[in-house]
Length: 280
Image 1 (tube, one colour):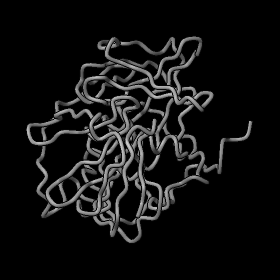
Image 2 (cartoon, rainbow, N blue to C red):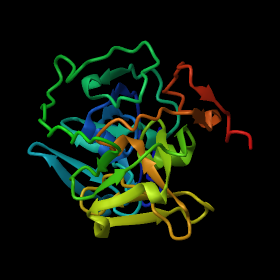
Image 3 (cartoon, rainbow, N blue to C red):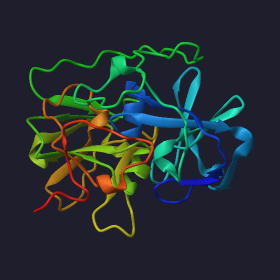
């Protein structure tokens, strides 16, 4: 039996394996909903899944005519979803060993330009053969002469960035994994002077983890998609890079907190790795 929870702990559940169909999805909708380089889901029989708390609080956003994306309305973590006789769970919210659940990358044709796939798992440009998943046409992102724009999943919240971030890290801590419902977060820190809301600022709500000194996330209250985190008195804005609509030009400096890396996500890229935070 493996347990799972959202970042704030309102949603709690347990699931009995075996697990199957571990899939890393690189589509733009998953990146915007999770605010991560990619989303990872793992399947299990629905008969072995049980909600412990919070099921009645879940909010779902219809990202297409045939699919709704459930999330916690407090902390914006993505919730499990039932598809037929199976339940698909965001693996970043699970605590425990998933066993031999397989693995593959899908919608690699929509991969973030700054992300490197550093494993030998099968890759599919769109939907894997035999999977009953619809293809959804998304509008092409705007091409800017300078800077880059970003948006939440529903598109109500939009913003623009100029220049390069001060820092760009891939974080594997348990908080990032639970908040992004993913293998790790991709976080860029921009000076406030380089950031501007374009629309939807009133729909953005921050959630700060009570026991953490600095950790906070933000999301769109309509779709649950990740948004930048702006905090009073802090001179930087934290941008989940998965929600950008273009190439930020900058590339990740380091993997951090790799001592907390998810056991189901081995990686071997040449980006600098630190067990915890970088020195200094």
